[in-house]
Amino acid sequence: MTTRSPGIPIGDTTVADVARLAGVSVATAARALGNYGSVSARSRELVSAAASELGYRPNMVARSMITKTTRTVGVIVGDIENHFFLSALRGITDRLDAFGYDVLLANSAEELDREQRALQAMVERRVDGLIVTPAQVSDRELLSELIHQGLPVVLLDRRIRGLRADSVGIRNREAGRIATDYLLDRGHRRIALITGAGAEHREALHAEDPRELKTVRASTSGTRASGYRQALAAAGVPFIPDYISVAGFRREDACLATLALLNLPAPPTAIVTLDSGLTLGALQAFRQAGIRCPEECSLIGFDDAEWAEVVSPPITVMSQPVVQLGERAAERLVQRLNGEVLDVAAIRLSATLIERSSVAPPPG
Image 1 (cartoon, rainbow, N blue to C red):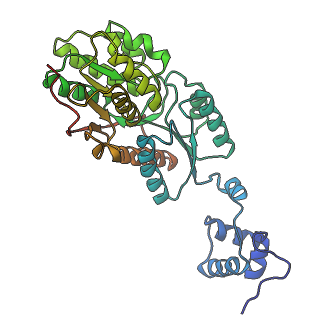
Image 2 (image 1 turned 135 degrees about the vertical axis):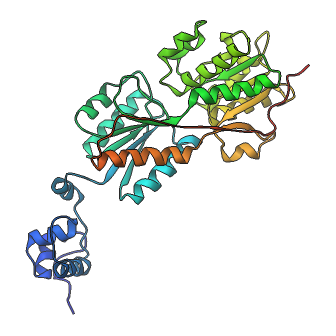
């Protein structure tokens, strides 16, 4: 029976130690341990047994220098607490694990500076590729440089105009139009939209001319707002800029935005919120203001969070296939990592309206 070589503690074992115990060359041991190159079955068996006996742990930095890969993908999302990103991460990590990749995760908190620091850190850790939800759809300098250097990048949920990167998301304009049409069909004419978009998009979102939205259509909020505007125009309903809220992504932002909408001289009879956190903020505002939903104000949210069906009233939502979005983003990135020659693609899936009890005809 083979015994552990004296003076070699677990964790400090080198490839040379494994090679010596296995009775093979260091080069053969390295190929067997790194799973590259040509190694006979007998040598591989000897190396595996020696590595197990010595408690060998691979040096990932050294391996990456040899193989030119770390089998690691960097993922940067906007808000790790948001239901959308949690579900997307499930799809991303499940698929990447199946392909043999680990994930290095960062949360940008929808701040460009934090996103850029995360990008720099991931590049320094030699990730093989990136899946990114960009904090700002107008900034592409760093990502563009990384793509130019050959790092595969897939954008999740949002895209950046002019950036040659694959993107995966839903058909946002269609989803915004479906949600608005649903309210219009039930008699609503004063319909508000809580976007979560940053202040830099306020002017475009509030512009009387819908063509101004072209400057923000790369963003989720801008594209859904475009569908909202299309539905209003098709129904002959005047667009009221005050009914589009530009408040931020936090639940507290949505609460304040909803309270402001409810205090308008002609408050909306229905509100569409563009993610689950904003929906919670709107519900909080209803309770603070003593507004009954849907009797006094109807509500449609985006994302079918677990709580949406159990709150009172259960929330009508535009359900996004979020796990599938994460899976498709991971699959597209792996195709790039495998060297497949592909045209840059915008992969789009459809959202589905789920009817519950938070929508009723307008009061009166």
